[in-house]
Amino acid sequence: MLLSSYGEMGGIFAPTRDTLLRAAEIIRNSGLVAFPTETVYGLGANALDAGAVRKIFEAKGRPQDNPLILHVSNIREASLYADMNPSAELLMQHFWPGPLTIVLYSSDIVPLVTRGNLETVALRVPMNQIALDLIHETGLPIAAPSANRSGRPSPTTAEIVRNDLGLAVDMIIDGGASPIGVESTVIDATGEKITILRPGGVTREMLEHIVDVEAGSPANTARSPGTKHKHYSPSIDIRLWKDDNTEIFSEEMGSWCYLGMRQPPEGNAVKVIFRSLDEYAHELFHVLRQLERCGAKRIIADLPEEHGIGEAIRNRLIRAAGG
Ligand code: TXA
Ligand code: MG
Image (tube, rainbow, N blue to C red; front, side, top):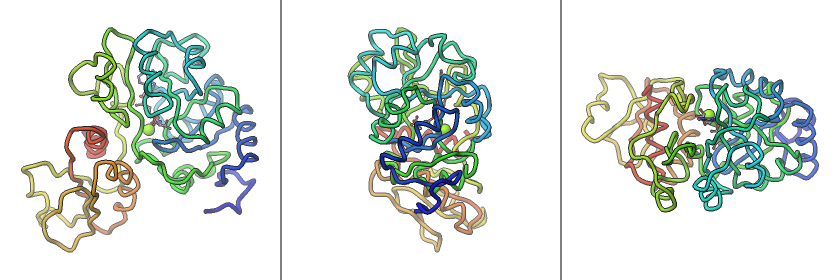
């Protein structure tokens, strides 16, 4: 940990009281602070300050039409920025704080740049004490996408944030490795039924216990601009191991390294094996970043079962492999 860079741009800071007070001040003064959440690290700015939000887009190299999530501390605060409805409120009561982002019609107070020029806004209350203290101390909604360069795997440690964004960030708060490892579930709650726009930590099964959920897969690009951009990609080629395509391991197709839950065929390759879906989610992004330096031509990733957090892992892998 580089705690010695205290006071420098892009420095990593331990989450002390003093750090939180300085971070809140940076955000109130239109700066950028990267902070931990239970899913991945976020790159935060004052969501109500269009100039500050533009800096997020610049720092990440993010397309302007990809809206940001407002991080707030509770349901009452959420209701200041969006039109509430009964099923959205029920979901907030059940899953907040937690990895569920809810898209609702936006209030006019939220600048258009924050919501990618849409009439809707995405909201969530993270389940991480550092993030909650920061929001509380700032007294503002914090707009925060994942704190990676646009298109790269999301960051799950403070160090990865620094490697990706470095001097573009005023401060990075270190909260250790992100416990979940993949981003929040994003749902559209503006219609009769809930639609899943991005699978994540709160699974379809969990949502279906509470409200009606539209059947079918996400990737409704008109409603979720983020899904149309290439994302999560390591710098070398990535191939997916499904059920019946073991030929992808053949050496004629080039050397490979591997991550997944099943044992791959014999070979001298670097292999990372996970014992559970939770562990796969927790390690996914960070292992993708490690394997791109494994010396092989490509990464082969095991596509896990489509239940629980497996749906989110599959979604990220399919997009990392180009759709
Ligand atoms: O777990 C997470 O959600 C993390 C942490 C930092 O909170 N944040 C995150 O943000 O993953 P980002 O910007 O990388 O992904 C947000 C997703 C994008 O796919 C974006 O298109 C979608 O949410 N989104 C945001 N606002 C939306 C809106 N108004 N309508 C539809 N989709 C929206
Ligand atoms: Mg992201």
